[in-house]
Image 1 (cartoon, rainbow over the protein chains, first blue to last red):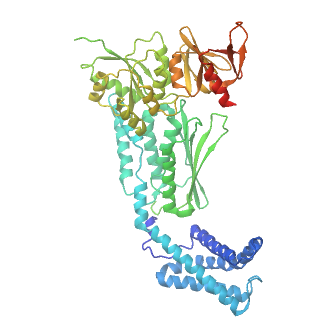
Image 2: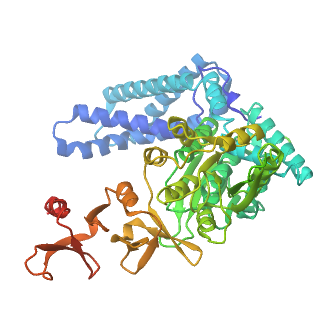
Image 3: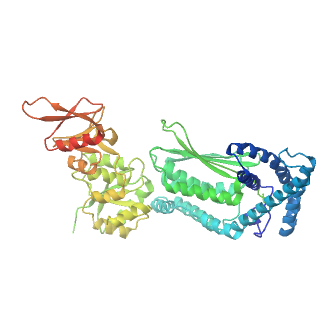
Amino acid sequence: MASIRQNPSPSRLPDFRNLGVWLRVLLVTNALAALFCCAANRHWHELPDEFVQLAASVEPPLIASLVMLYLLQRLLERLSYGRGILFVVGSVLAVTAAFHALGVVPAVTQTGSAGLARALLWAALCSGALLYYFNICARLHSPALAEARLFALTARIRPHFLFNALNAVLGVIRSDPRRAEVALEELADLFRVLMRDNRELVRLSDEIALARQYLDLERLRLGERLQVKWDIESCPPDALLPPLMLQPLLENAVYHGIEPAEQPGEISIGFARRGEELRIELSNPFDPKTPPHAGNQMALANIRERLMLFFDLEARLETEIVGATTTTSQRYVVRIVLPYRRSAVQ
Amino acid sequence: MTAKPLHLLLVDDETPARARLKDLLADIAAELPSVVVGEAADGIEALELLANPEQPRIDIVLADIRMPRLDGIGLVQHLAGRETAPPVIFVTAYDQYAVQAFDLNAIDYLLKPVRAQRLLAALRKLPAGLPSREALRSLAPQGRTHLHSTERGRILLVPLDDVLFLRAELKYVTARTREREYLIEESLTHLEDEFADRFIRTHRNCLAARNAIVGVERDNAPPGENHWCVLLRDLGEKLPVSRRQWPLIKALLKEDS
């Protein structure tokens, strides 16, 4: 099962197949190069040129090293942490030396053994610093901490919804006892999910079923005012996503898009797979007159952080208000892109 | 003892919530007889019901807070300026901010799901009137953005930003916008107090929007007397300034220039 418990020990090499790791390596190395340029610089106006030249000599071995580590990731995973470090630094040095020997480096870098020694020293320093940085990151985001954060982040349902739902059930209990029964069963299911261990990714089909139950409860009190359009034809039901992601988004949509509106409103929710990505789009009517609510931002920040804990930089959440400001048909859109992971159990 | 049954107006946008209140009222009918004489789905519908001359007397309003169009607190803001308005008891599922303000201002409220005994207690201890202006201000610090006017049984909301002046005429107050006039069922004194930062009194019976005043001119009508008039943007009409208000208007113009 894919879960954040994939990291068994905090002292662990970074995953060189992760886009976020690549991005950080590139950024940190170039930042170090920029720092070096600033330190060695004599005239400010020469700085951009100097940096470009230095970058030209840094980038080829850097990218080649990353590609190599990407290819050797399987092997790295089997090594102990200490050996892994030696292996990584060794490969980086080897790649740097190879580039130097081939003379691919631009003219600014010295050739000969002095230049080689300098290049190797810089490569060793850079890779050492980066490994240290990743070690600190891993400790900061150690599974125990991440799990504690996840635990605190999930299981938030608005009290507003709970009390209104209970009140609605009480409102129909005498006139339509069966409807009340169904509603209480749905409420029980919803809370079962809320209270279970929510640290594993869950199947999209389960999330959709839960969302439908939630919406059914809301329909009890909102009636025809709540319309929902699902677009789930092109979505893979076996895709995995963080638990309890749809329900809070729908709750937001109901709270901000349906409840304050005089006319019935439509919430639309769609899923699509694009290659190795799963895209979710959710939108609700938006009234520019109602001021933004702090609760909304909190729910979105919560989901964003959970996406980050599960997928690091590979997932993102964006919001947008579409439609002209003059029309009454403005909509608030939430878009989530996350890597497509498939569930093992069918 | 046969007391007159209490006449109630229920205001909630959710049908099951109103059904629940009716069930409970039926349950406590032996102890406190009551009749639901009206139901409204939001504040505007409630104002319409209250404006309807055929509507039987309403002794008390039970109003939800979160509603479309005009919420419970907005409803009370609109009722507060009227000479007679039934007391309102707020009913809310969960609203931390409002509940804090209610507690601070000793305003009674009911929490959903409401219990029969709690409802009975609240109805027996009828609030003396609507919340004070200070209480309303702490409930809704941003204040009202609209006035309301009743026309042929319908409620029209008049944006305060559009109102150029308010004038008391016999029984009513009229609000003048660039396009037309609206009848407002609130007293001029109340409006002056509530919107002191928006309007300035020019005369015993008139309030002018501060940001609509573009200048003054001397009134030529009664010879020998020194009368001034306020000029308003977008409007040919001039408003006479009373001698008593003249220093205030002068100060306002000096402030602007």
